[in-house]
Image (cartoon, rainbow, N blue to C red):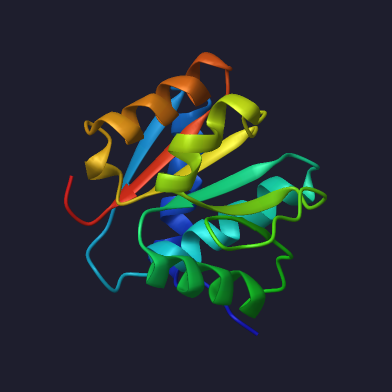
Length: 147
């Protein structure tokens, strides 16, 4: 069984509090502090309430690491990425930013978007995706070690 450390639990509580006031929140923690695991726990909590959640990443190796982290804590997920067979019937999706930047006009935005390495948000593909999501009314959590 995987459990969070006390500082991770506290950060999740703080993110939830901020999302009650703001549409987007930045979660900044050092490399190795467990941002992916925390994201997985936030995803599990959101999806357990029937809400669609997408976890957006930008590198192939991060895609496999994220899917593995979700599997470790029992979160069934689909993958939206080039070369992957989609499963649109699960509320949790691990999505590739480059693929999403090409496909987003044909997709329905999730109810929560968690963006890994969000310090890239000023770049065009990332900015288009965040604007698309926020304009649809969904909250967004950005995660990075280097804001």
